[in-house]
Length: 146
Image 1: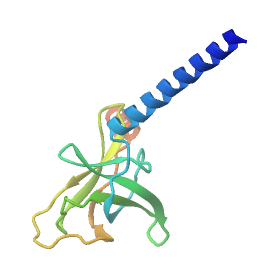
Image 2: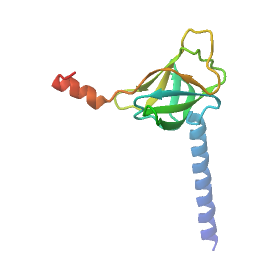
Image 3: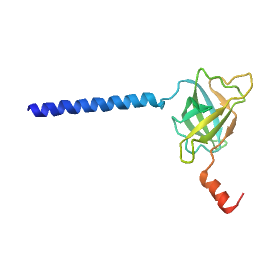
Image 4: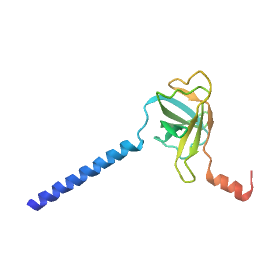
């Protein structure tokens, strides 16, 4: 009886340490979504972007993708993003789907514009660049097609 009690307590301690480690890793990883104002942008392709993907300016995370939907009129992919309230985006800002490397994940890279007017909550980024497909680029290079 005493041995099974010790094993049960030891198992509970191991589980508590594992849960503590997971919570610590999650809070330190920056995976959590950024709360702030919402903006949207329409792209032709958003391959590799999911809810929770980073939105960055100059490599620094300033937001997260919070929604993806298809625009029925134009068949473009619309991403909804939550941007940190301390980051003010001019109305002529641009957004691009970029990759962290050859096999890295993808994120949204924002290029702030120079306009004095700012994008309001619920506003839209009009200048966008969609993701590139590595397979298409390799095919064009290998077969010399345009």
